[in-house]
Length: 207
Length: 114
Image (cartoon, rainbow over the protein chains, first blue to last red):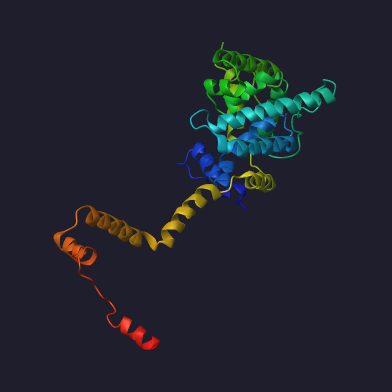
């Protein structure tokens, strides 16, 4: 039951780039190893950029990986990290899809996930689920660039220079985007503190 | 909202790793197999060279062949005295001498005619 498609654990010592070269040389196992590393991260990132639309995120990730397979024979070693390259392609594909979706719906954003229903269950789990849903909903309200920068920095754990490569921006612009994004998230979530189980002024440590 | 509340939210989101479905992984690996460059180019190049060597009898035979080639070249350029003498006997007989390999041949032909 615990076995998934990722059961073929990639060897941790082999860099992504080496796996890509192996793939380009016809190695039959390289694609599985590389996918095991890249797909979960790319899928989580794409799902967040697409406001929780998992099916569309899967399509985006498949397309991004297909582009990676195609570029593999011409990959120039040392030029970019494979994971950064994938994040960049996913970002661009998600931006395109969101624009298409916005045009179709005449600019309205109507599918942001809602805070989970209060179905019976452990209170702590409910709160955790509510908090996760609240974060996703708040992220969905940010402008594209802010959302991408915040997710890459604080959830995917990329450094600012890496984010600069992914978003094709300067490092200062990235710092500004993440700071503004965080402030906006705080403002959006401020009204839900009590609903999400945070007590007002309880553990802030401030005056 | 306090910064650490937001950080908690981020930490919880980080801990939750997306699990791709087996169907998605199968789709991705099918794409990979479909566009993967075939191993044929380097392998075929190696196979051709290997085929040459095999046709000559393998690497051992190749070493013998090289030795024989060098030895022949060396004997041609700097022949030992014994080779010189033998070659002189075989190819440069003194004037008037002849080497008759079939001394009775003429007689046999004459007999046949007669």
